[in-house]
Length: 329
Image 1 (spheres, helix red, strand yellow):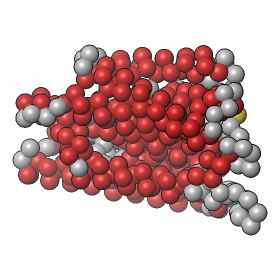
Image 2 (cartoon, rainbow, N blue to C red):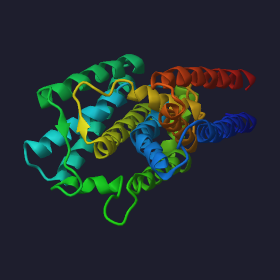
Image 3 (cartoon, rainbow, N blue to C red):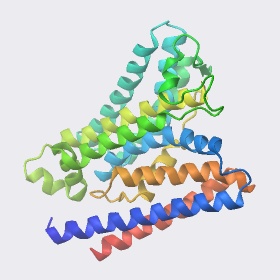
């Protein structure tokens, strides 16, 4: 890719990111004035609570989308991994730390399976991950016997992991302190460094720009494309842990639709569905737009289904802007 081409793409990312930041500020101001009691600490905590699981999934799937692929399994995988981890703790009596590690490993294994199906078997990412979405949705029900799984509270045995995402107790605000935001930012910084400052990240970006040219230049495209899916699986499992810490009870067969929120956040944040262009910072901005919408709409008297309507409209606009930028370049 020529230098001028790179500059144009990076300019496009910067423009869309600025637009996303502006949209986020406008939404926050709108809900603050139009909504009753929106501008308060508890609302801020609720926004962050709803951003954790979407944010982790979005960070992971950013790598897949940058390669030009898609991962539709992250929503059901998020719940499936936590259901298995929770069952191992509640019924098998394994230590919570070990259960959390197993949860993350399961996510990586499903990500590996997705990557191999796409990179070696040649399946379209849409079909491969659609199949995995169905498998993980069913697997969660099989493992739990269709029963819900309730994770231990903070003061119970094994409930310590909740403190990673929220500190609550005497002397602290009633809504708690959203420590999960720190973990989300740390993981975002680490993944931004991986994507922009390391060889694997550069190869993943190159795959999305021109997969065949990357292969002909001697890069092992199977290895790096598979790595993108493994990262996506890992973060889907991490999202499951954050979801369990925030909402306690998980139901088998759920998780459908989570992936749409994550993918919408990624695209709104400036990552191109055509691949080769994207940023973790933009993804986080898109995620917070989704979270502010989800939290703020009830404050102005609108039902949650309005979020779907508005998100769909914003997503179409974001994709259209990407198409226009691509044509200009």
